[in-house]
Length: 442
Image (cartoon, rainbow, N blue to C red; front, top):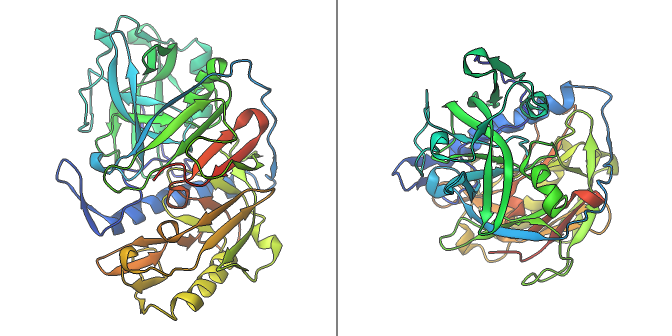
C-alpha cells in the first residue's frame, strides 16, 4: 500500500492531550513533556485550519439536516477514562471485538470518521497495552472485498482512496493518515462488536491495521465518532438512534467519565442542570465534523470588547484538540481582559510553549480566578471555573488554557477538550443540536 501525503488531513490523532504537570510518566515509564504535547497537538490544529479554509473559499456554516426521530430509544453507557496511563492525553473506552470476545483499549475521537485497531499478523505495530487482535481466532471475523459498498465509503472516511489486494481475494485495503504523519494501513473488516454484556453489534465495520506508524501512545486503536456511515455512531444508530453524549473527566487519579450512545435524558441524573442546547451546524468543507456558533465570551461577567462579526467563523467541537483556539481578535481581547483581572493578585510569568499568558503559581494555590463564559447561539453556554480556565505548565507556572488560531485571515475556532472537561456534552444528531450540562463527572 502506498503511503500518502497527509498535510491537509482533517481527522488527526495525536498521542498526547491535556496534562497537569511538566514531566508526566505513563505506566511504561516513558516521560511525557507537556511542552511537546502542545507542540504536537498544534499539528492537528494546523491541519484542521488548512482543511477548512483551503477546500472551498465559498464554504459556509448551515444548519444541519435533521436525521429524523429514531425509532429505537435504547441507550448504553460505558466508562470513559483519561488515557495518560497509556501515553495519551486524550480519553479511552474499552470495547469488545470478535467471538469469543476480547477487549481492547481505544481512544475516542469526535474528529475522526473511521475506526481501526492493530491486528495480527503485523508488519509494523507500536507497543500497545493489550495483546494484539488476532482475526484468525475470531469465529465471526470477515475481510471485506473492494467491491463492497463499505469499501466505496472508505475515501470519505479517511481522505485516501482504498486499494484492492489481488493476492488476498480482492480484499479492500485502507490507509488512514494523519496530520503529524502518523498512519494506519490494513484491511477493511467486519466482526462482532461488544460494548457491554448483551449489547452487541454484528457486522461492525473497522480497519484491521497491519502497518501502524506514529504517535498513538500504547492505545490499541481509534474509535471515530464523526458524522459518516463508517463511524461508530452511524453504525450503532439503527439500534440506539443518532445521538451520543460524553463527559471528559479530569486527569486526577480515580476520576472517570462516560460515553453514552442513544437516547438523551434532558434532566440527566447526577448532573446539576439540564442540557442547554445550541444548533448543530455543518460546513461543506468538512461535512463529517460537528460545528456550532460561538456568539460571545465574558470574563468576570463582562463581555469582551469585540464586534459580533469576530465570532462568525467555523467553530468545531473536537475532543482531540487540547487548548481552545479562538480568532486572533477574540483571543487578544480575552487575554487583555483576563490579565487585567489576574495581574492584580498574581505575578505574570514568561510564556510557556504555545501558551503566552502565564502566571506564577499553580492551580492549587490560585483560589481567586476570573470566571470565563463561552456563550453559544440559543441558550447554551460553557461557564468555566478555574480548572477549565487555567492549565499547569512547568512547576510553579500556570497559564491561560486558550490560544489564537493563528492566521489573521481565514479564521477558525476550536472548542478543545480542556474546556469540555467535567461537562456532559450531548450530540443530538437526530435533532441537529449540541447540548451542555455542568457537573457530568469530576
